[in-house]
Length: 319
Image (cartoon, rainbow, N blue to C red; front, top):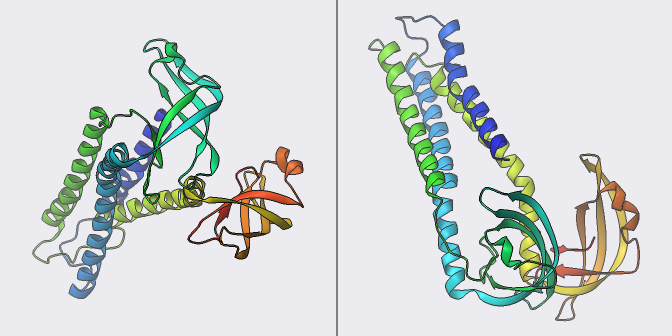
């Protein structure tokens, strides 16, 4: 996983930094005449500044600010978190590192959420003391739930400490500083090289000042598109950690026609009554493995969790 992150980061940087500059240097000739009008040049300049401002703000926010916010959230949970006792119902050893004697493990926890509803949750983390067998099946661990469900993480193991990985933080800071220096250097170098007292009238769409920024923007948009697909999962996790349980009547179960990696998407239409006695009819979509398709309930009742503030939003944990 770490290798793939490094590989795709370097791959992205190649097409966003040296590639546009190389293409421009090998295909364009320096001209002492302006390439466009003053108005067009300032439109290009403004466009490029907006792109680079967005790129830099995005990087600073995601690489630095969010990390500090998450640390503050964990500190808040340590001080104000709601205690729960969780039973370990499943344990799998994912990877063992003989050098450090640390195990990467996958466990399933059973505990009561913020609405006191019994839920199951899977998590993967590094066990730094595997010889103590703290996470064997049947044992219990203490959790602290985040009372503010709008922020991640939604819970932490009791006794967790908040600290930055110094190496990771240094790399992030170095990358952000590099990007800021790259943008400043890009504008400075090409202005000194090509302005010839005509200001920014050398700019064109394929100029590295613009095209390099466009490549970064496209990369970030693809990243946001991928992350956007995970937003639904986050919303479902919010319902899982704060939702109320109810027994819903299945109205219909159909395939939507959408497939992800050849796995079909199923749409459930259900009706249920919330804790106030109000009846709701809503739908829930979920990707199901082909092997599990035959076990999906088609009629009868199913246990759901719903958002107390918006009962139309539900999740079916066992579906």
